[in-house]
Image (cartoon, rainbow, N blue to C red; front, side, top):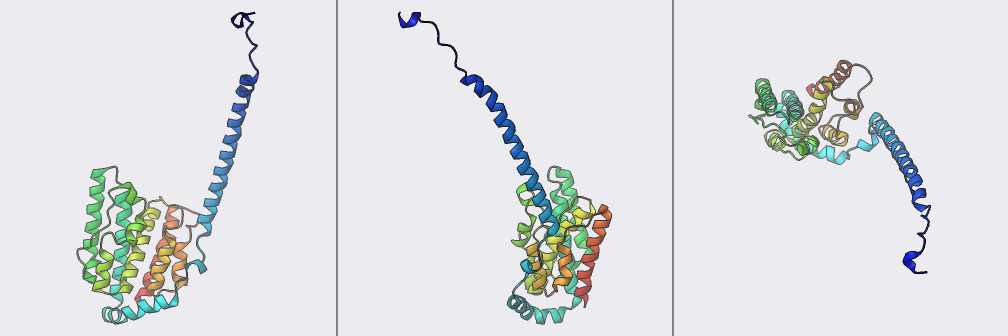
Length: 250
């Protein structure tokens, strides 16, 4: 019989089998993804609560001693007021960067917050005390910058850290940069926007250690906020920041 007159071949059962297997595979894949995401979330939360250990944040004693030697004459000449001014100016720069960055999608609000921050720095006069007035702020204009504010602080994007070191000493520079790294975190806590430990804990620890402050004073700054209201968490951080300032006044 000619091939074109033969009865059609019965359809195979393979497509039917595939139609049943594929949904099952998709369901299993989604389950695995869900489990993986849940485990990752638990891991991330646990890391955020544990925070870095003191051993992991150790700074070589030789580096600390080098900063002390390089800063001794200027620190003795300038006194506690300049140390506090460097610390407070850093906090103001960090607060401004966080506040301004959160207004990136609203140009009018962005400009308003920047102007308010500049007025605050002018009124406080810490930059005048240090001899670096007018202090340039860190004002992110792109999400890429705002999402990595510690990098801007560490790279001295506004040039203020170098100016402080030249006008005062390396110790004052480290106090400023530590404050700038913590200022945004403090602002976010006060606004009820933060629930984790501050970003860049290693950099914060390094700057404060090189500024001559003992771990007992700055380690609490790196711990995740305690449970409680936003006001309570912000108050706890403010108390820790005040402890730093009290140490600088000695």
